[in-house]
Image (cartoon, rainbow, N blue to C red; front, side):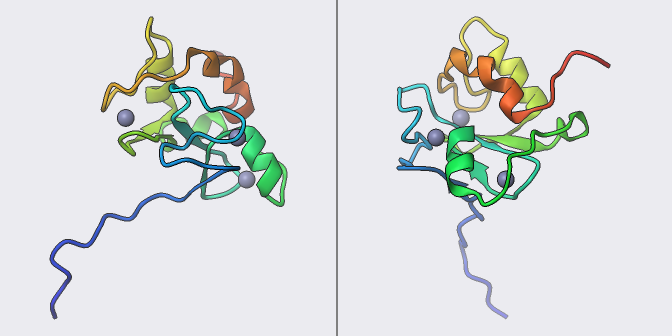
Length: 123
Ligand SMILES: [Zn+2]
Ligand SMILES: [Zn+2]
Ligand SMILES: [Zn+2]
C-alpha cells in the first residue's frame, strides 16, 4: 500500500490545431490568447471553437445556463479552471485577466462568448 509520494494532479485535456503549451492555437496566437474552453458536447477543453469544429466529429453545443457554475474555462498559463460566471466577471473588467494568476485575457474574446455559452443576462 504505497501511494506515489507526489503523483501529478490530473491535467485536463486540451485539444486544438497547432496547440502551444499555453493553449494558443492556429487561429488565435497573440500573447493574450491563453484561454481554453469546454463546450457542453464533449469533455475536453478546446483552444477555440474553430479548433473544435476542425477536430471534433460532432457539432459544437454551447454550454447552457444551468452549466454556468461548472468549470468550462481553462487558463492556459496557470491551468486554473474557471466557471463561466468567473470568466464573464473577469472579461467584464477594464483589463480582462485570469482571477487566479493575473495573466491577461484577450478582450476580443467576449465578442465570441455566444459561440461557447448560451446567451446570458435573461433570467
Ligand atoms: Zn464537442
Ligand atoms: Zn483554434
Ligand atoms: Zn491563470
